[in-house]
Structure formats: structure tokens, C-alpha cells
Image (tube, rainbow, N blue to C red):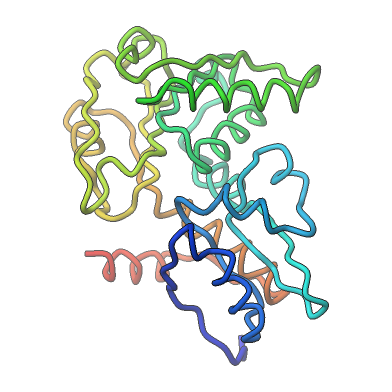
Length: 255
């Protein structure tokens, strides 16, 4: 696209986050992506935010203006919804289960509400955090909310697995360097779909188990690509195409 520039990974702690974004802004960066655990922390430093960020309460894209302002956007919602196209049938939108309580959980919950899932359950090891997400969404969406949202401790997940049409893991459990997510998938219906937001490794234990049971499943690589497509657009005003070649390059790099 004839853009002179680069995109690189920068590690920063929550403690140093404010200093880091100030330095990057000063150094002439156009913007950046954020990953866990910074998607909620960044809200403190925004001068402007889009509607999705306001409702979701998580941001994964920052845009720096020449005047010194920081704008926050959420392209995770687009990425998640887009990567589900072709996997979900309209009649299978009765019940969904989300595991986790971070910024990605919020993006997934918002997506499922927009996709008109009737019942959405949030399970987390710390129930209080799941409760907070539920309360935030009920408060912000008020009368426009058509989905029923529930929250519970992860140890109680089995009670809902038999009824769920979609199971989404938004935690880092199963990622390289983390312990696996242990869930008994045998309780799921044969029509259920498993979505693991993790893409490194490309196939987590959760997805391997889903495959053994003949359940439809996908990792987070398409979501990563689609959110990046919109992130790139917000920084450069140019939108790259997603194609098989690009995905194959990424899969090769991850392997």
C-alpha cells in the first residue's frame, strides 16, 4: 500500500502503561493495538471513544492525534462477529456460554447481544468479576437489551453445557505458557460450536477435544485478522484485504 512505517510488539506493565503511551505518542506513533490486560486500563487515558467502547468498557485500538488527544476504538467486536459468519445458523442462537471476565469477554458479550442470542451465560473462576460485567451491560443497555444475561462461578458450568449452542473461551487458559482449560465437552449437543479466542497454539486442548467429539470449532486467528483489518483502517484510512495467503503466512509463523 506504499505506506512507510512499521508495526511492532512493545511490552509494558500496567504500572508503566501511562508513561509508555505518552512516550509512543511523543515519538510519532499513529496508534496501537492493546492486548490483555490493558484493554480496560486504557479507558482512563482516552479523550474520545466510539459507541462500542462506551458500552463494552474495553478498548483494543488507540489513535493518536497531532493535537495530543487519544481516541479509543474496539475492533474486537467486528472481528468476533465476522469470524463467526458461516459457522452459525440463525436457529442456533438460543443459548451461549462465555468463559472469562476480561476485555475480550465484554467484546464477545456485546457481539452475542447484537447477534440476538436469547440467553448468555458468563462463567468465571471469580464470580464477582462475571457479576460486574453482567451488571454493567444491563445498566448501559437498559430497555434495548433483549438477551437474558446470567453470571456464575466456573465450577458450575456443567449445568448449562447441555443447553448451549455456542461455547466461547476468552481466558488465556490453553495459551502457550498457561495451563489448559479443563471442561467436559461431552455434555454439549452435537450441534454446539466451540470458539477459542486463543490462536497460539493454533489448536488448544479445548479444540482438540472438540474435534474428537465431532463438534464444529474454530480458533481466534480469523478474529485476530479481522480486528487487525479495521485497526489498520483506523490508522491509515486504507483497508487491507483478508485472504487465504495472509492466513497461511500467519499460521506458518505461529507454528
